[in-house]
Length: 126
Image 1: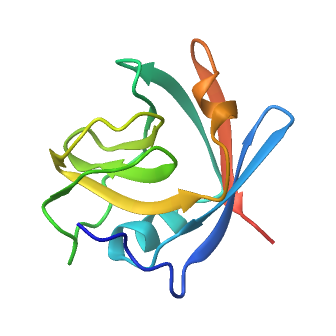
Image 2 (image 1 turned 45 degrees about the vertical axis):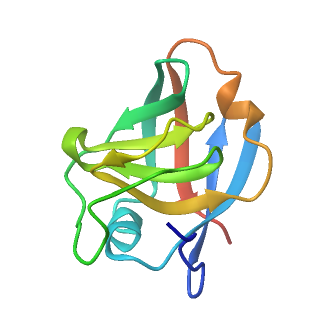
Image 3 (image 1 turned 30 degrees about the horizontal axis):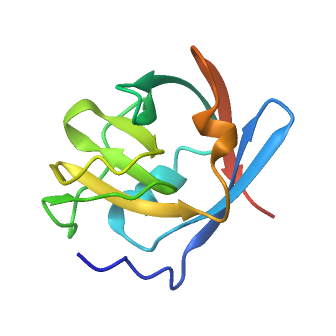
């Protein structure tokens, strides 16, 4: 599947301790719905040595998005069946219910190298 277009996307920051990661949310219904929840602080944990994930306070819109996707490391992803925000750091393949909603600008080592649970604040990048 082709990479979604970042056209008209929204710039965000993900703050983990003293580290600030920047990225862009793409222009799709799921990303626009996530934006309505910010700013927010979420508690992430590792899942299967492939990704970091955090539960969201509510389900996000799935209007007009594909039924599944194959995210890449560095993507920002929503997994609808579990209502979680996902930061993959490995290529784990296609899953039904996955929606790519954005991408980090650079290295995600600050996410990948976290051990145990950690908090991340998500806000607009000014």
